[in-house]
Each structure stands twice: as C-alpha cells, then as structure tokens.
Image 1 (cartoon, rainbow, N blue to C red):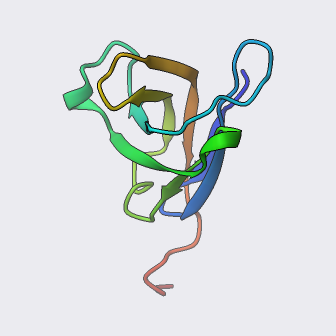
Image 2 (image 1 turned 135 degrees about the vertical axis):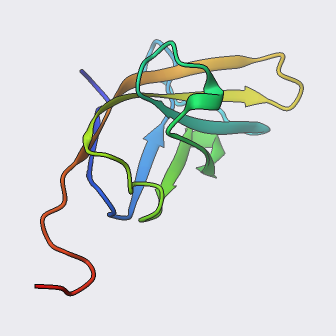
Length: 116
C-alpha cells in the first residue's frame, strides 16, 4: 500500500507529504489547510481518533506539507492503524482526501528513562 507510515513508539519525525492530482501534477495548496487523522478502525468517528493533527504547508505551489510528529504524538500502543490526509480550503467548498493508508507504531526497545 502506497504512503504507508511506520514509526517507533515515542520517536519524533517530520514526514513530508506531497499532494498531487490524478495525473501526478502537484496540487496548489494556496489557501488550504491539511490535516492528518489516525484511527484504530476506518469507520471510527473523528472524536475517537488516536491522533488528529494539522500539517504545515511548506510549499503550497508544489503541494508540499509536513506532518511534524512529537514524541507525545507517537506514544501510542504499538499496532497497525489507519490514517488519511485531508485538504480543504477556507470555506470548505473544496475538500479532498488525497491519501488513505496505514500508520504503524512499532514497539520501542530502548528504555528512555535510562533504567537498566
């Protein structure tokens, strides 16, 4: 499955997301917001999302945004989840979900508290 995300629990990451149209042309994100939602089940209501975070749009003309994940964002029970990226303009007259895929949290091995 394309656009899969896999990250170790508690790690930080900046994931670059490029939105393109069906022809592979970069989507102009000027005036848009970009959001990522992660859920246990695809049909869970948004209020039950494990993570819902606004992405930063770094290069609107080339369709590039960044999902910046903190250690707290990824401190999630290891497992396989589902996510999507949704973009919408200010008045919601244009809403698109260009990415739907899996979001895997891997078990961390090293104890971060320095304990032995």
